[in-house]
Image (cartoon, rainbow, N blue to C red; front, top):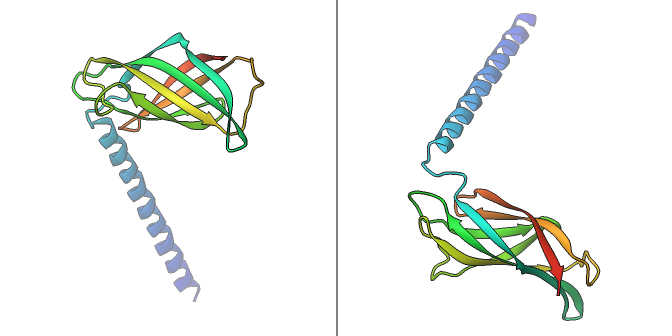
Length: 157
């Protein structure tokens, strides 16, 4: 009887080893595939204008909300494909925002620079009126690459 248990333990250990090696090989394959897609992880650069970043306190349906706005230029820094910023997060409040690009279809063509804007509606006010604040903005493109606009200063209007 102990021989049967020993054989079962050896078989279970072998199965675990096989599964472990299989998962390691899959991970290696996925990593290699992502490295060779031809897409760069850095596709855009940003130029933020100081006068074009602001926030304001308002009221929607009896609820206090803060509107946070950032206008900037986005440049496609790739050599071969169009990029589209598809989402943005205001890091100070972890709020998703609206992305707007001044083009017909929201695409920034190769080596082009276009006007763009990010608008966030924060439902839990985090600053008092008249206070400025600094936050990073996380911007994601259609390839799920994350870009960071660091240290954007927002003045109260």
